[in-house]
Every structure is written in structure tokens, then in C-alpha cells.
Length: 233
Image 1: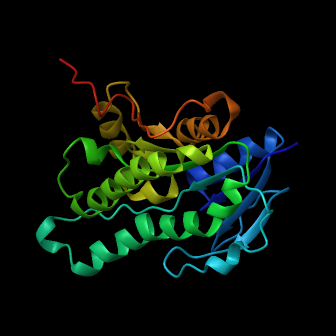
Image 2: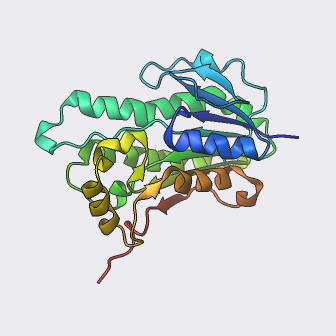
């Protein structure tokens, strides 16, 4: 029987790429975002991370085998220029939106024999980076949420993991990779010699949803070209 997977934020970037991979493998893919992805074979639900409506998930199947929460922010400013609203907005999209989704679909996840939740952090939580205070604060909360939920939901056979990427070529990061000079500078910052692609992250995402990862939970996986753990000499 095909697995039912919900991808929140699949209209572009990592979520879109993950949805494509899952469709190619025969999964039943449900997407939720403001804009419908240009993908044949999905079932789309309208949902907004800034104004989350939990009723949007009422028509999902009774059993859900996985959920992926992709909405995110890259709000880079000097700390003295960050307002309370900046912090609140990042926290709403990155953390409260994820909490809203997981709480809404948890009964459906519990009905699966083995379910998986995939969240996203950033390498900037592990490696201090200037101008990342707001996004790192909210994504740090996601890492804490991942570990807490992994412990709480393990008896229900629900795995919870988090992927912490470095800079990835998605629409969200377009201003950081808007010309060849910026791209080359980013390549040089990563030990592996290049910045990430949506496929780099989506492939790990779909692995964490698969039966090949049923003994993995409570992990923050650095998928970052070595940025978070390697110092080149």
C-alpha cells in the first residue's frame, strides 16, 4: 500500500523537489501552501504559515505516514536593526507554523505503523554567524522541538528528525546567490567546494520518510557541504 505523505511548503525549492521524488516512487503526496505546486498527481490544500488554519487538514486520509514542514525565512540583518516583529515573524513561520501542523495531523500519524516527521534548521545554529540572530534563534527552537518530540512520540513509532542545511539554491536564497560573484564566494566558503541544491536536501528528506530510516530519530543532520564540522587548513 502506498504511503501518504504531507509536504507543507511544496510550491518551490526543497519541498517541491521532495514532492517530485516521492511521486516518482509511488507515494501519495499531499501538499499544503498558499500557492499550488505545478505538479501532476498531488492533492493540494491551501494553507498559510502566517495564518495557520488547522481545519485545512481535515480532508487528509485517516492515516498519515509522514509530514515534512518546509516553510522558512532568511532574514539577515545586523542585530541592532532587528525589530521585535522580525523575531516574531521568523518564530511564527519557522516554529509556530510547524507546531500547528504537527498538532493537527498527530492523530493521523499515530494510526500509521511507523511515521516520520521531518523539520528543517540551519547550520547557523551550530556555527555562529553574524546577522543570523533572528533566524538562528527560531531554528534553534526547531532543534529543541525535534529532540523533545522524538522522545515523546517514540512509543507511538513516530520518528522526528531535523535537517540543518547550509546555503541552498532555492527561491528563498535567491538574493544571496543572485550573481556569479556571490555564487563563487559561497562555493569557496563550503569545504566541499559548492553551495547546496534543492535535490541535496530533498534526497535526505525522502530518505528520512522511507523504511530505510526506521531506526533514526531525534537527529539533527548537518547537510551543509562540511560547513558545520570541517575547518579547512
